[in-house]
Length: 269
Image (cartoon, rainbow, N blue to C red; front, side, top):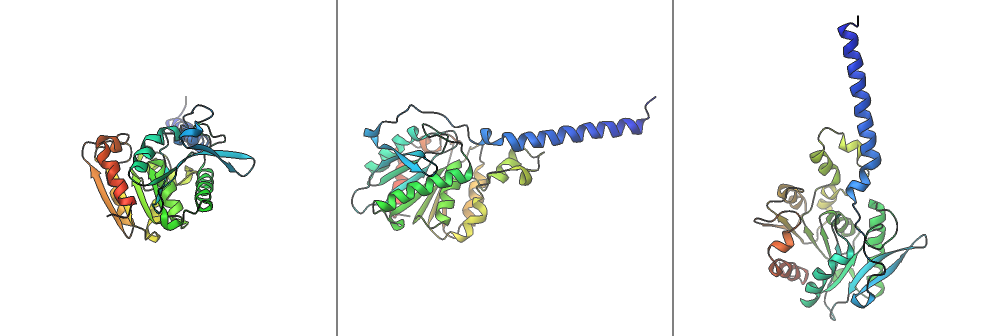
């Protein structure tokens, strides 16, 4: 007959092994969850402003570039994790029609760009795109960094590196570590998350004007997280959109909200 204490030890051991296996799976398999990486037709239409941008190791990333009118700023935009470059054309066109340049950057492994997405790989693609702008005479003073969802972490990092004069963040998070802890509270997120995009620790050192737009009904990244991130920046305005969720915050208000972004990018408050 098995003693109760022996049964308890066996059950605890089974639970511990199962929990460690779950942690290992979360560590190994997290990137496909973070980066769903939708695909796009190859090649992207050059006549619409799409082009290859060379990266180290004989690879490339795609960008969408709509040049600015003389003397106007260029918005450099980083999209969400479920989006791709091809889907940024409408936003870019509207901002371009409002007197701004537009440069959207694809992520490695997304759309038609080869490779595998990682935090450092996305930063490298962003740096290459910004270097292209500099080569074309667009200074940091004429660069407005923009991000949506996942892309807000990229925009914040590029601001930390001194690349822009203003920042626009749509549906931002504080860090992917905090997001993981919120979604999976039973896992040790601080030990497992590999790509952290830690905007909350970077924000206090970024003195640029920041505009944050967040849907009040966002069930993926709660609006309170956007507010808390806004409070970390020395100079940030947080505007919430009633009735908007995570994926429809720009679309909910139609062209008015995009025009709001354009006014801010052009130097307004």
